[in-house]
Length: 388
Image 1 (cartoon, rainbow, N blue to C red):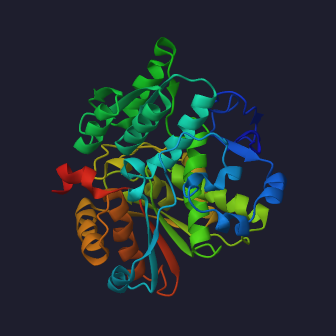
Image 2 (cartoon, rainbow, N blue to C red; image 1 turned 90 degrees about the vertical axis):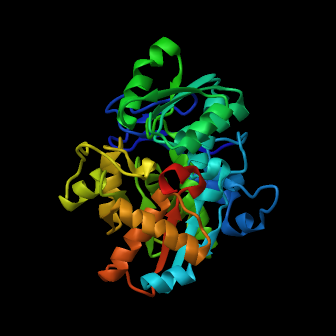
Image 3 (cartoon, helix red, strand yellow; image 1 turned 120 degrees about the vertical axis):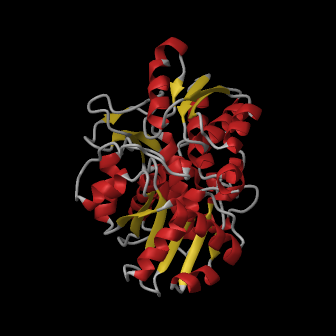
């Protein structure tokens, strides 16, 4: 049993059925989001029940009433630790700093949540072939979950994709195409081959279920903080699925009566060499323009224009948040800081959040007593070719 009612466009509010594979809104091409019968969910689920769920339910599917399937394709994703970062906090100027370590997910990144949920639903709908444009970790996650689901995975990645990711694609049995260009060039090839090859395009925010997997990061952090929202969340932002998913989780928890109306200030962290979100935010814009000549060591942040640009900006404005850029040199230094002070070997994208927090503590935007959560989105071992 699931509590899904239908899908709704994030831009025009058009409703479409959830009983078949869907891509984007048929009216305006906006991203679709899953809607639930939250009144029924509330009768079946509450924080006390969740607190009693232990092994073997310690995965993101612990929140199954707020997810779209009761038959998951799972590798044990989710339920990552929220680690107090006391030494790092002392170095940066914060008294209540935490790291949500997503590098402990299957395939070593937060992408396991979204792709695990998407593959679950596509298997349920009978899809046999999937394709994705990726900067690195999304391809690894899709390849792994497709292998578990006995689906055919096609991965399109820039030729300079981290070698660790490329090894994963191949070992998981995916069919790999390396592209001279960026993730947008990969996306064009996926789109061009849809009718010819018959694959389902699992691109960021062009299907509704990756957001559902990523929203569990928001559910978990609130539960781990005793059903309180943090004051500030730092989120490394490429395509922005996790940012959107967590915001959706907060809305659903408020409707269920589990939290109040308070929201974290959301901080989108980007690299100086690819910062479409930060540039649009600084201009008080409602949409983004493609960032020219995108380049950064943090492959997951090298997204010149997120598909759901309007939604990302709406969240930053509504939360009274901000967008911060950091240099590759600052990212490298932050990798070392997080490793040497806290024992967390972070991916460059996750370390970028540390560098961003340093800036916002220094300029007073963050207060020392605030509860601040940094999302480390992946493990550093896959990036030895750029970090070594």
